[in-house]
Amino acid sequence: MKAYRVVWFIAVIALTSAGMVAVAVASPVSLLGLIVGAASILVVLALASPMTVRAVRRWLRTGPRPSEGQLDTVVRALATSNPGFVPFQPFRPFQQSPPATDEELCRAWCASYRALHSTTSRRKLLRIVEERAGHLDEMEKRNPGTVAAWVASGATAADNPLPYLSLAHIDRGAINWDDLIDGKDQ
Image (tube, rainbow, N blue to C red; front, side):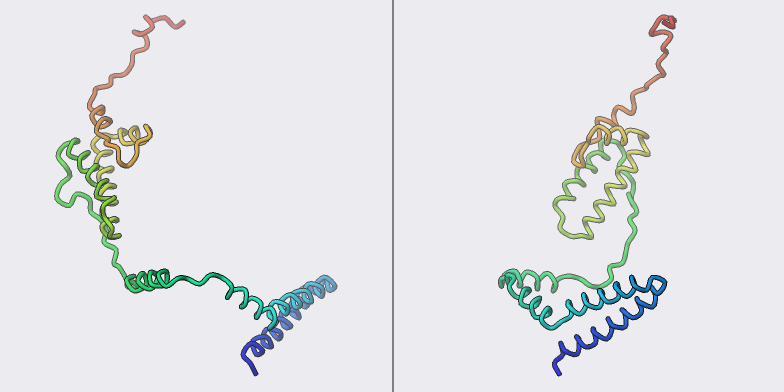
């Protein structure tokens, strides 16, 4: 007996059982349960029939076959991939010390952007992204609110935040509206 006939026979038995269970479950509405069970059996039998299986196989064979170069590329990619466990190493920003001035911090930010686009290693890429996160945290710690203003201005990852950080040192006193309107409330 051929393998597809055994599979088809098992599918028929399983679906018949499923149809019977469906009828038993839907017994309060027995006619509806009978219709649903019979329809499900017919659909599965039609899909599992040897003719349908052969037709699907023929249809799948008509698709384009990959070229030798495409297969070689896939094999190389699978051969060089590392399925092993890569341990997570948490990043500790500024293990030595953070840059001393805002200018140095901004230079480090711009240098990390260039390094981000020149690396090919995923591990180095992750390290650079974590370093940039540390730079942003340090900028926010030194000048609260300026990073949000810099980002809100439409800044990109390549932009230098120094103009916004240098504005943080300007003393902005409270506006006295009474002096501006000469004490008039009108």
